[in-house]
Length: 134
Image 1 (cartoon, rainbow, N blue to C red):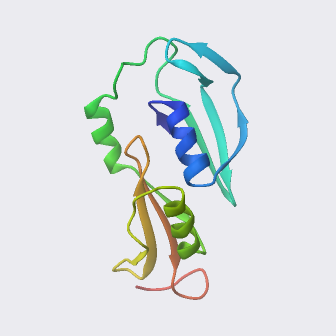
Image 2: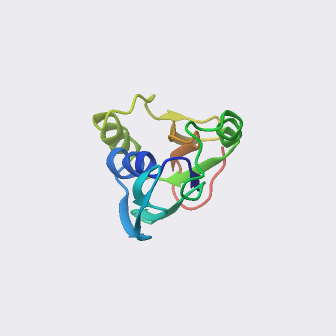
């Protein structure tokens, strides 16, 4: 996923959501600050790659409103067997989010947006097994 500000995104995914850094590009000094241009993150069996959307010295002073708005149609669905535990962890970390809720199609979900306006849905099916109806 391309991100506007790597330190902000890293703080969100690592410090708020609990992802670990698996690997990263070398830290660079840029006019925008000191950071890695890409980060490979992991939480349980979920791997996520973040990459800066702009090369050094090319990032605008503020996020492009159109770009941020278009991220609203991108949603990552992440399997999470303990939604209540995730909700407790996320709210303790300072996120203001609604508690998990049941979707109309039978999957319990916890939804939030990241700093780049990407929608993240942590979910756990309410049925037993790999398939079900709802």
